Length: 361
Length: 265
Image (cartoon, rainbow over all chains, first blue to last red):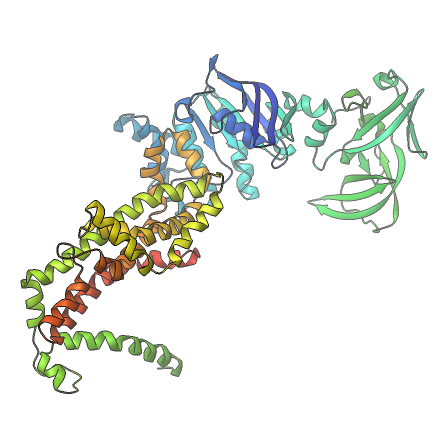
């Protein structure tokens, strides 16, 4: 099985929701669509599912052009962010509904529903109505309805976003096993970079209606092809600053400079944009070689056991994330350490041209 | 009992007085009604009811009323359901204006439309039929139903539609098997209001009928004038007129509250 978008665009009125996009998704891996809210992930899913018709371009499934085919005939499954179940049907009837519509004999339905329900631990809930279930159970019902039928593709549109933390972790662990070996194309939309990294597979980065990069998740993370990709696949967004290369040195403003080696040294002299993830800008001296820079701390927050500081470096707004609790004085200048080896360098056309020697993301 | 509890009790008693008086009157003879003041019937009689249920002029009034009211409710909902769905699910040119314009239809007094309807229906041969009254009442009931149903439909997420299509439901199947059950409260409320407005509307119903489709309220006035003032009979007819409404309210009582909460009723 495979699913392909060929030069698909979607315009609504004068607005372009999806710019020309080509994407080929395979079976057997998680295909993740990662992007901020309203970046176009849901629209892409709707285009693939046939819930919206592309303005131009084609959708192919298994070597067949299905652009004109209605959703009903595409044999797909879809799980929404909001727990969507049929409110007047019991959990059993909910899970059974796609089978009933497909005209599968009653004797077979009962078995298959029970199997799907057991996989998702809904066995004891079959006689209940959706509004008598917890959020997690409701979403599991929706998942059961998605896996009970044989579908060519399963679309999961931020299925865990509305669940509480613990349930989310639990279900996220189950999902890959649940969908593995089903022979369906799995498309999973999320707005959280961490979730994409946890799920692995392939990731397509979606930014303002464009796919900026598509490839194996870890590789996409380690090698952002351009600034947009780096921004999307970093939470909080990657720190950026203009730099100038002169000989074997990078100059950031007039104060900060660092020596470069390896592929970065091979770049032609001139202006570049440097990108560095927030956790490589720390208030404490890291083990890796680093250079000091001072920034004025504007906002601080504690995120779990990490200290997050928003600082201004001249014109640039940067973010630093460091493990442990650090106390900053707001409005005061603090010294931070940045690891040049973790930097990404982007050419003026915003494409990645070189990575620091130790850049693994 | 707490003093505060007396206030609603007094209020409810106050509201019940006319209904109580109507019921008491229907159980008295006309002589007793005219004879003086009594809280309870001195000579309990069911004659008035017996007359209504045995005289075709009377009971046909009820049959006529219920017929055109039911017909109206069915037509109104059949027209309003697709319209409300369109307003709730699609954006099209002028949709907001059209939606508001629908409601403005309710602002004109019914009497304005009595003459054009009378002339039009006489010309096309619809005069004195159930359909005539039912269609005339649609003028008020369809906009109201669209308005109510749109509110209920918009509270159902569009994702439900999408989920059903993905599951393989065709649009008609989805609408009947998934969507209607999801908004059954709204359908109940809309049907209730159609029923109520059509049931109590007298002017158009009287103007557009003569013999065969004459509503009960018209029967009441005519019979009363021809046979002197048979107050007991009139009161019994009045009681029987309240009953269908009471039954309908009983069935939709839980939904009405939601209808009000939706801010559309």
